[in-house]
Image (cartoon, rainbow, N blue to C red; front, side, top):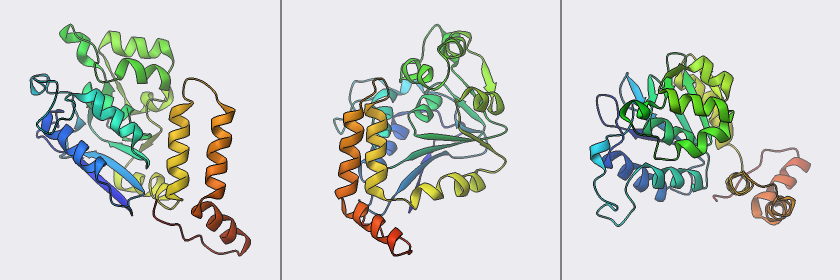
Length: 238
């Protein structure tokens, strides 16, 4: 099953405490049959046009969770299923930082992406200065962060800031997210954890350990059996 989590703060879904609370609550309580998550922005104008700077006034929220974008972006990264940002319209500032924490980004052709913080004498503080250079060239990341300019979806795709540009988000989700949701939840979780662990330093040992864990898992045994028996695999839930 694919779960959709909405960024909902009209008119342009500025990231505030309500949005971060929603992300915490939804991602920390995923049902066992959820195999992929899609983040989307409500309305026609934006995935999210940035952060509501005045919306984060304390270090913690009422539930004891850390406030701000960076902790929730870290939560997205460690969520044990693929998380995909489905972007339309504006994806700026804190909205782009949330998207960068996702495993994949799908964008419509009208999307515009950028970090406008420098125009206010600020800088991206939700992980943007860390994640952007890992996705695109360091020089392009510097330009994007230092100029405050926006780039269209086609340029973002060419740079590697988004993976897929589509005409329609629903069709894009069907094309690129549904295949993920059909895979072994155990294998997907291992793959995601391994990719994050080895993002900055190669580790053949970690890869071998993850492979061995998959091979000995119920899903690994089922996958091999299904291949040999020429049938569709029946994955266990997580």
